[in-house]
Image (cartoon, rainbow, N blue to C red; front, top):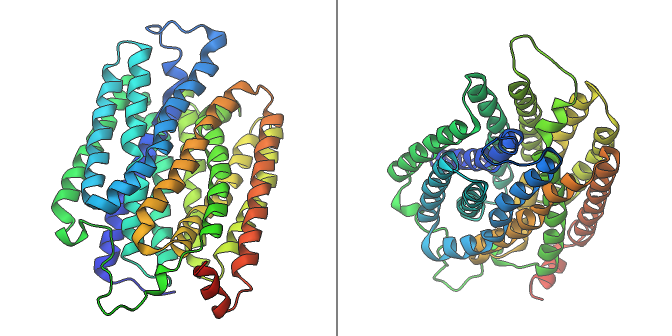
Amino acid sequence: MGKMSSATLRLVLLVSCCHALVHVYEHSLASVEQWIVTDSAFGIAPEQQKEVSGELGNWLRLPFGLCALAAGWLADRFGAKRLLLAYLLGCSGAAVLAWFSPSLLVVVASMFLLGLFASIYHPAGVGLITHHTNPENRPMALGYHGIFGSAGIAMGPFLAGAVLMTGASWRQYYLVLAVPGTLLAILLLMRLSGDDQRSQPVEPTDGTRHPEDNAYWSSYFTLMTLTCLAGFVYAAILHFLPRYLMESGLHFRGVPEKSLCNFLAAGVLLLGVVGQYTAGRLAKPSTLEPLMATAFFCTVPCVLWMGLAQGTARLWAAALFSPLFFMHQPLFNSLVAKYVPRRRRSLCYGLSFTLGFGVGSIGPNVAGRIESSALLHAILAGVLAVNGVLALILWRWHGPLTESEETDEALL
């Protein structure tokens, strides 16, 4: 495993803070959806509340995915720094709009704008990191990046639980979320040097071909199928995770139910850090595909258990799911860099997140319409098993290949 210079590490950590925050924004709705749909100002009938919640999740996640492709193209053209600043300030503005929203239609608009500006982060941020790392230290850099992301996913419900415990409303929670985006934008503007303005790599002047300019397009598009399926599972489970854990029957004296379910979700999601770190630590350029297949296959029984678990077993099933599922993310991001040429990296990351989060955006909508927990989780487990098979196919294409065979495929 290659070491990173101190300058590269500082860059990775700064961008990773942006990653943590994007997942706070992404999961902000899941943390308070139960109180939005029961807000008397909106007059939603009880039998329609879960369905409306799923639709709100769809409105947040759809632009979060679909607009990532355009964000990747813009990052390649204008540089990651400008795009990251737009993401931070735009999300802060959308959070303020959610706080203000006088009607359900304005809530929908704020969720759409939040997803739109949040969609900028992944192609810009991940592309920036991969351009400042090499194949040896990249899995570890993306492991750190993933750790911050998992911490951000956990921080969303934890922060919501803490804010709600003070007696604040879901509106005030969104007002609080406007603060870190603004502060981080100021820090990014001050600390990120002009040298990092463009994520586009400088091409060699001697006419030689850089080894990371090879393209394996059949592998990349197979990987895109995999990310669509993983994104569907991710969104379907995480959107309703606080609600799922609320039905575990756990109670703690002095902690309101609406805060407790978010604290439990935060603890479960924080375990994703273990998976991210483990994957980043173990991965090498030659082991990315088999490690990802292993992660998906190991997650399948956990998801089946989630569907059957009752009472406190729900907490243990979800806690086992989290680190195993999140192992795939640094591996996936490393594989995108492995399969596509440097000059198209942000664009290709944009497409991957467009497909992953865009297709994934229907996850909450589908999950909200399936009443049986066992049936829903059986479907999700089957999807993950398909992903394991796809990862094995990628391993078959790349693991056994000799150096000369890889070169031949790259020229196709």
